[in-house]
Structure formats: structure tokens, C-alpha cells
Image: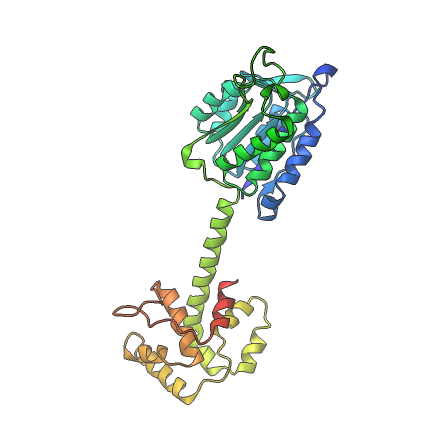
Length: 343
């Protein structure tokens, strides 16, 4: 499973420091990741008013499944501010945080959407985190939520590194090129070209093309191939049955739960001819010699289907011919092969 964990913490003591856009940020990220969620990525329930314990509990409950950890709240170069059980701010120190996150198997991206978190990047990357999004200045609450939304909109459909720049450009279209519009602590005398844009990404080059759905796509391909091999092996084992059982009987058997896909593969569409039956008897008598080759080279529905299935089962290439390989794949019945590929 590929999972995304969001954690948000606020200041409930000092009203001037209370962040009013955190709920909007959580909702916007959830909506932005919609395409990825539809593709199979799991967006875990956001941790609102998160404590350090809430975060560690989530990582334990979803061991080696969390690929993205996003934090929204107050922060600095030396700590993230979570809440304690009574709602008071409490620090998660950078050294311990980096060590903990670096030990989480499968974690790829950490997004620290708080003020001036850039000094934590070096620790996180050294600990083994593959990519970190952080800030160089104090950032405005509402703008931070906008940047997060824009980034995850892109990450849902783009590779990791190429998702970041479009998100920044989207923000610049709204706020202009001057970083002072989105920060709180850039000195007033700084010119626009000397003040740096507050958000940046540090990414391991090997993970620049990583995508949220990459592992899911690989898993689906492996599953399809396993199903194909199982069906092919079953076809070989049950070919005698397909030759002697009538079409009506096969259709009846296919009504049994779990047999539909198998019958779709081995069904011949009719009763075998006398020639097919004779060839099959020879094949049974000479399973590794001329009898089997003669049977598989017939133009009958059984021979054409078996030729492809047997080749898959033994791991040879059905599109090549020659010594030690199966004959060329027949194309007389593409419909059945299509059904096999779509399971």
C-alpha cells in the first residue's frame, strides 16, 4: 500500500499565533490528491491537533506503507511545534525528528510547511529521507495552504521533482514575482531579485522521477502476469477435459464460483473433431516429441489456444519459432486472448 500522512498542530494559547488556514489546507490537500486516491493511494485520516505520539502511532500502525509525511503548523530551524494532550505547544526537536523519520522504511517525501524549516533539511536528508520540501523564511498562513494545494495537485499526476516548479509558478501567478508578498520576515530594503522565494525542494536525484502511483502500477503488472501464468498452467493441465467435455457441460461448469476465468481460457467453442482427438492421443503418448508438436500446430481452436498457453506456462516466447521454442502464436481467435489479458 502507498499511503500519505498529514499532521497539523496549532497554537491555542496565543490568539495572535493561531493558524486559521490549517483546516483549509487539510481539505485542499485531500481534494488535490483525488486522482491518486482513485488510482489506489491511501490518504490516511489527517491528524488535527497532532501530538508527537499521534504521529509515531500512525507510523507504527502503517509500518513501511507511508510514502509522504506532510506537516502544517508553527516551526523553526530547530523544531516543529506539535501540541500536547492539553493543547499547549510542544517541540519535536529536529535531531530526533530527523532520526525517527529517517528510520521509517518506504518514506520518500517530507513536506515541512512551517516557518523557516530549511535548516532541518540537511539532517533529514542525511538520515535517509529521499526528498524534503521546506522554507527559508517565515511564511504567511493562507499562502502556505495555497502552496501545499498546488504542489499536491501536481504530485497526484506528475513525478516528484517536476511537480514542485509548476506549484511555485502557480503561486507566483497569483502573488507576483516578489517573495515579500508571501513572507513575513524579508527585510523591507531587499530588492525583489535579491530576496529568495521561501519554498524549496531538496531531492535525491534517484527519486526525481518517483511518482505516488509507481508502486501500485508495478504491483498491478505483477498481479496480471501471475494470473496469466496460473491460467496458462491450468490450461495445460485441463486440456484433456476440454477435449472430452461438451460445450454445454463446460458452460454449466463455468457457472460455479471461481471457474469463469478458467473456462474462458480453455473453452474451445465446440466438441473436438475426430482428428483433434487422434492428435491429442498421440500427444499424450509422446508428450515431449512429435505428437505434441503436431497437435499444437493444428489450426483448430484447441490447438491455437493451447499453443499460446503452453508457451506462457513454460516461459518461452510464443512469437518466436525454432529449436526449443513453441510455434508462432495463432491469431485466429483474438477475442479469447483479449479476455485472458483483462483479468
